[in-house]
Image (cartoon, rainbow, N blue to C red; front, side):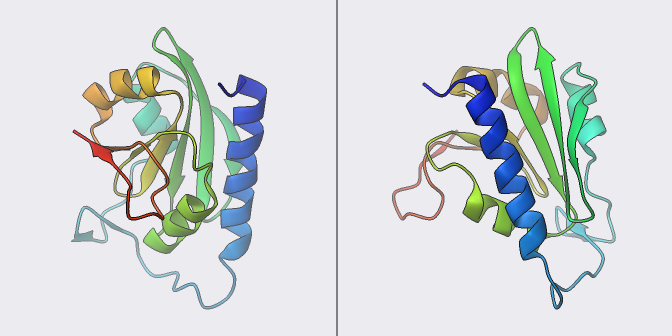
Length: 140
């Protein structure tokens, strides 16, 4: 089992790697959320509010934002993305051994029990293994 400080470090490193990978030529057009052109993606604060949390922002970059939350359900990180390309880059750098709750332009990282509880209020797909392999399982 991964300790919380190690999990936090991995999330921050993955977020920073994703932000750095979004160099010139990344598109930078308007975000598309849920197939609606021009629709703003949910913010870290909006997602956190749905589960009763006021997040502590850990990464505040143009391409992504990450906030830490602690609720009675448990501890977790909420990351939102300005573009699908940014989300894809983050997912490619994300820890492959931890489950992720994944939405259109957001992801939540925590343990499986916490994600099961959060999924009831946030929706999204629960990715249980590395998304880069053909054996990825999506719960639900």
